[in-house]
Length: 78
Image (cartoon, rainbow, N blue to C red; front, side, top):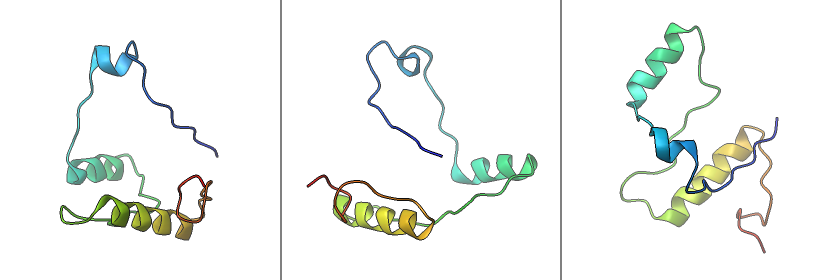
C-alpha cells in the first residue's frame, strides 16, 4: 500500500468544510468500538523534543514497522 502526501491547495475541501480534532483517548476508543486495533502506536517526541529528534524517532518507528523511507537514510533528500 502506497501513500502519497501532497500539500493542500487553497480551494481544497479541508479549508471550506473544516475538520475536527479528537483526543487520542477518544480516537482509540472509537476504533475499539468498531472492533479495530492500532497497527502500532509509539511516542516519537514531546514538547521538549526538537524537530530533528522527532523526525529521527518517527523514521526509526516507521522502519521498525516495515515502512521504506525514500531519500537519504535520515529521510531527507540528498
